[in-house]
Length: 509
Image (tube, rainbow, N blue to C red; front, side):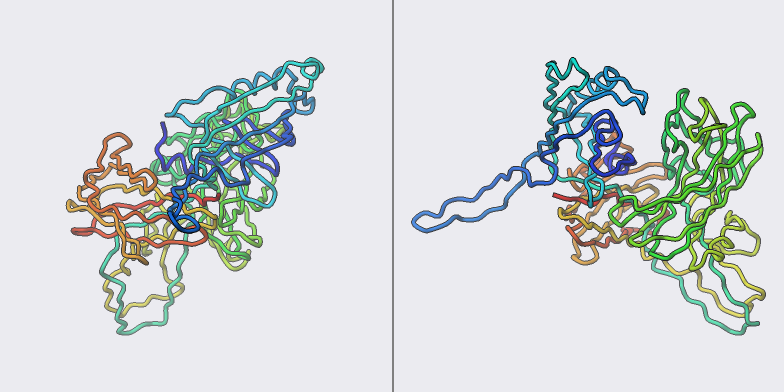
């Protein structure tokens, strides 16, 4: 069973208006399953109240209202779709496979896309499925009904994640003595896992069988990402992607992505996509490069640049594999990729220039922030001359703060993931605006992870061991509806190299 953070960050399906995804089965326009009616999505669930009548007076004594579980019902029409190559009975069989009871430990994911609204997700159980075998059924047009039960009535958008290290209380001062006129130039690689040095931070897409770290097809320094296509691929968007971070309307984003086929037959072709997302996580638009032929056993670097449209808040880049004569890759195709470069600039030419050289974290004479080859990093170098006369008190201290936003109508409860090492005394997660805090009083060693789920108050080490007894202060604070909250990551002892990641999703009634 995946962790709470992993469940929130599950990549959403690609849905258009009036489509839904139920346990991975797409319903709605363009599928054999036409949604004739959908009820229980855009409404308040039943309310449980504790109001009490006032004796000898008009009205009630008021108390908090609580929403009960949500029931979602649908009427669907099932018919053959010759254009999709799916027969009537194949469509019925696929529907029956998802219309089965779900256990408490394994709630299924349901996504819905309504016009004018962002994608919404509920964790559900199937509670009812009815498919009358009448004359319409015999003639090839079945009309069925199903009901899903969502224990948590709130609908959630696409998951968001942001990270910081501990707050540092030092550095940031430079006292100039003399200079020969040199200027500093800051260049930033936007990809969080540019050289594939960690097992995380890429998004599998389409008919990908697996993505593994590999020592084959490496540019810098130790690993590449090795992509393996399914034995029966069907998706035109098969590959991997990484987040390029925050943007605003008008920004230019450029990406340079190398790809190396692992054989001559089947030898994939490839293209690069840049995709824009709204603040709530919904897809705005995307553009692709032309499909390129790839020589076997050597890297081809594909460059793509695009401008952020109105409403864009973040960007993601994808590397998609294709076949010899179709955008669907050949079965069992393999390829590796390494050293992704992404940059944001005010102009197209500046964005392209920024990705011309890889920010590998090891350029002689340059100063880098971040972990070389395994995090977003900024390079500071000189343009034409050196500033040689100053007293340097070190890089500015990290504020150790995260800001979480929620454009929805319901408050959103976050999951905190803390990767060691942390001080032996523990740490605080402080809500900056209210002063409320969570305090954890045990050391987390390097290589271990503690997750704190604000929705359930669960605290686990490495996804297994209960550590709730070490959470000695529990002043929970959600991300408010239509607002934001800022939290600080504070060591209780000496500074350590641990990381705090906050995971949450916009939430709607």
